Image 1 (cartoon, helix red, strand yellow):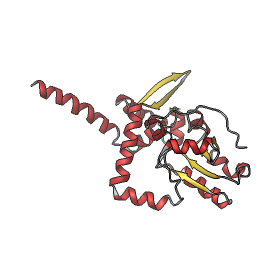
Image 2: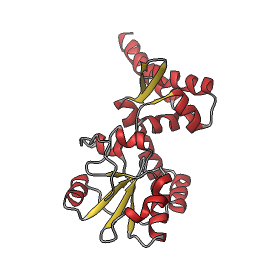
Image 3: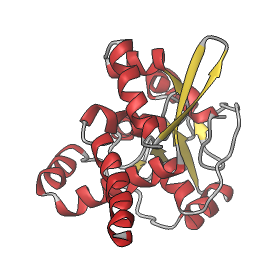
Length: 224
């Protein structure tokens, strides 16, 4: 009897998490909230959903402890919890490794050459030594919420306008929100079209943090 009560607690709690991530919109919300905290209005615009629907999905994620919230004035801001971040990374990794449809979608879409370094320590060393320019092409507010140490912020919507400020004597490595984010792909295409040697880094700040590394916090955006 006691063992059955114990099992029921475990399985019931886990089933709540499974139900919370059973909707693709909620998965996308977790992905966005792994980057930085955002309010309901911001998420509603980015997701092209009504505020009521967005709020409903967020409450389900909050109940399952995958996101947390806090209030600033009249706005409620949400952010992924460490458990939410870990779940998103593991779920994404499982899908990429085992689901043929996801593998095909990734190989078909991400045609830009990836920067082949899997160790963040190696990447950090190259940035510190000035061997590469690490470009964060996410929206500015996500960069300010935490980024790779030494990375420069240049949102993809500003890239073509400011591309002449980029150095011509070093490789540029662009990253965005992680393995499934398309911003870095677009950035590399623009950079290479303009004669800059560029690569895509598939990892993002979630992978960096979950591997035990610290983010850098800065408003500095200058490229030169």
